[in-house]
Length: 67
Image (tube, one colour):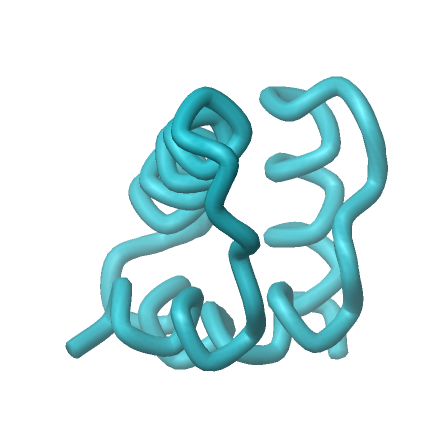
């Protein structure tokens, strides 16, 4: 739970707002391997790219960041 909370907090700090719990859950395994910073930065880039291109970012898409 603490790892998930730490990751959610870091993403919110970088993104400027809280994110969906399903998105955080999709990144917990990556965060356990690499720490919170790498998946948080990758997630924020993904969300910004999605916003710029008009594409929806779903939990399924987020899961692919760790693949």
